[in-house]
Amino acid sequence: MGFLDRALSVLAGLVVVFSLAAPAAADQASRLDEIMQRGSLRVGMTGDYKPFTYLDKATGKFSGFDVDMAESLGKALGVKVEFVPTSWPQLMKDFEADKFDVAMGGVSITLDRQKKGYFSTAIMREGKTPIARCSDTSKYQTLADIDKPGTRVVVNPGGTNERFARAHIKAADIRVHTDNVTIFDEIAKGDADLMMTDASETRYQQKLHPGVLCAVHPDKPFDFSEKAYWLQRDVALKAFVDQWLHISTENGSYQAIYKSWFD
Image (cartoon, rainbow, N blue to C red; front, side, top):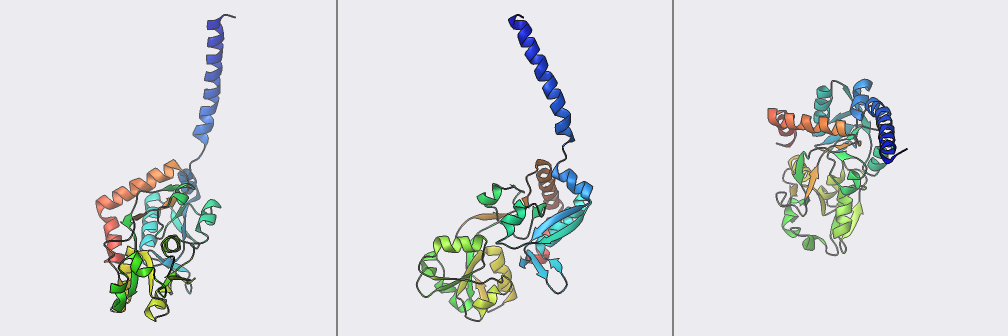
């Protein structure tokens, strides 16, 4: 067999291989296909991060900005929404165990999370800033002001708030409070001095505790972060969610949901 004959033989073999592989790839269902066939979108939520997500343990019902956004996404998909309770310390493990299709509820974009899945288009840009008793806000303008012996910084475990505090606080006292719903009461009643969290949360808690708790320069946070929806690794699902977010922003439905929770 000559060189040309051998080359043609190899090429023919490759054509056969690719022709056999193509139908198999085409038949492989995407995560988006699975959701549509299942008829439900599984949404992981911690239920302890107002105004993004809150779980009423008495009724078992979720409420919040991202709860309304999840229902909007489910409607766009034509499926029902199934909320799956999780927690910040458990979020990564539950995501890896495929307990939900998407994590929502004030989830910040991090590189560690990006390694495990995809993030949607960012829905919010902000950063960490302090919230303290209104009478003390002038004392905690900078990280240097905060990081002093005797200052009591309260954190919730397992999320970006704790990581930020431990990365920047060396001299002050870091206290872990496991209930993210009541953590701001620790500051209000004087058992902690401040918490550093996302600017959106400080604004919301300031509204819930008028004249008692005040957000410290929420327009100028200490760092940069974005919130988005954390998706299982599927190109089709990410493309759909990004397009839904784009349309929601352009037709005003995103702004209407935002206004009902943040303004």
